Amino acid sequence: MTMSTAARMLETYPGEPLLSASQLAECLDACFDCAQCCTACADACLAEEMVADLRACIRFNQDCADVCAMTGALLTRQTQPNVQLLRQALELCAAACAACAEECEKHAGHHEHCKVCAESCRRCEKACRDLLAAL
Amino acid sequence: MTMSTAARMLETYPGEPLLSASQLAECLDACFDCAQCCTACADACLAEEMVADLRACIRFNQDCADVCAMTGALLTRQTQPNVQLLRQALELCAAACAACAEECEKHAGHHEHCKVCAESCRRCEKACRDLLAAL
Amino acid sequence: MTMSTAARMLETYPGEPLLSASQLAECLDACFDCAQCCTACADACLAEEMVADLRACIRFNQDCADVCAMTGALLTRQTQPNVQLLRQALELCAAACAACAEECEKHAGHHEHCKVCAESCRRCEKACRDLLAAL
Amino acid sequence: MTMSTAARMLETYPGEPLLSASQLAECLDACFDCAQCCTACADACLAEEMVADLRACIRFNQDCADVCAMTGALLTRQTQPNVQLLRQALELCAAACAACAEECEKHAGHHEHCKVCAESCRRCEKACRDLLAAL
Image (cartoon, rainbow over all chains, first blue to last red; front, side, top):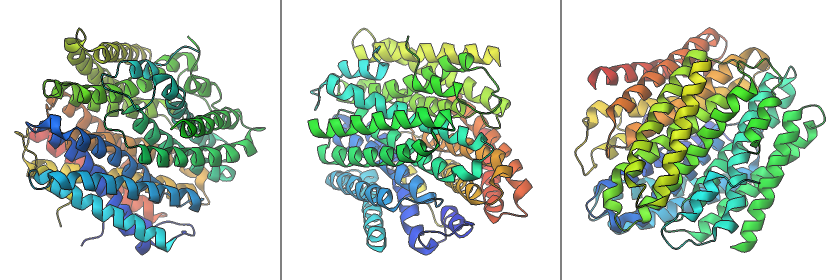
């Protein structure tokens, strides 16, 4: 996989990072990837004929997008880190991703966007849990 | 206090809300208020001559702004609520507000913006804890 | 109307502001108010039985929420202002609010949330245009 | 370059897209990439010893991050597109990226994060202008 710019930026940080760039990069990329994916899945669900059956999926997508974007922003910043806060954010993010993945997986057979989104959520859930283990 | 539009919108929700509008309104308003306040405090800190001494304050402000905006968005949505996720978001928000308030309070004697921001953070921390108790 | 904390924070800015707090306060409050209102209206539309007929409303709400939040953030920051960028943001925000108001007004007779949201959008559209005239 | 998940999601949209996935993908990726990069550059500037000389860079980074994230969200949604609004958002985004790039380029010789950020801003500025030409 090519390195994202977000991951490249980690290497340029002038201070003492709490975590190495290689530890952070996967979780950072997974968070931003998942945020975008969930925004797209909510919009694709809205365009489906059966939109009324996809209300939970849309809601879970929206929450997951907000939580992943917030977590990605906290992970991006390295100045004056607050480990306890980061841990809670990662726990929340893993939970939001798991909930959204579970819902999307129900529709993955019918809707390709739910299939791709579920994969992105599962990747982000795992990346959050891996980073929690490393913290 | 006049009711915010966000609070008024709660009354118009067509479904069965998980919580009453009166239970939600204070926490909702406190989250958005604190998000804006923290963005403003980070910017005001940046304009201070002694900006180098305010790095922690700026960082905590930025994280708190992101966490409060995310929590406010989750609280705003009432369709297909996920109580467990909401609880974790409120816990995180209370922690982010407490951390930011504690930092801002150190500078409240010198910087009016830190004083106002600390008050907004403490109000939001309390509102999150009150809502957690009600959930 | 009581002053919002966002408006109060404007008074605490330690540098030379581009605009007076009284000029900025109404637009700042209107932007954040409208952002929250649009997020709530999108969610309320999603809960309506006739959600399939409200796709445009949901989409316009979501875009308007994102644009208002961005504009509110730019207005909040006073350090090193970029007038040309602010002008373009205000033009975009007025346009997003006008488009969302127009769509919500179509449903205002049936859905109270669309009625309240349309009012919030029109207030924000006007506040952006007034600030543009003052810049 | 490997395809981002955001770009892959474009292919799964169930409705009639306004633009082809291949037209959108570069601009979408550039917007999200630039948003993350600018958040990281603001944080890295804050950690520099000479932070007081980087106030403009931090401010431009923050605005550019907000504008790129908003533009990326608008581009992600394909249901009920509003071409006029999209054009204004792309114009604003190109302007925010150009302003931020210009400022970062002044510091690119001293700070690697400003160098990487300026490149990301220039890529996003170009992608916005290319998409504007295609709209």
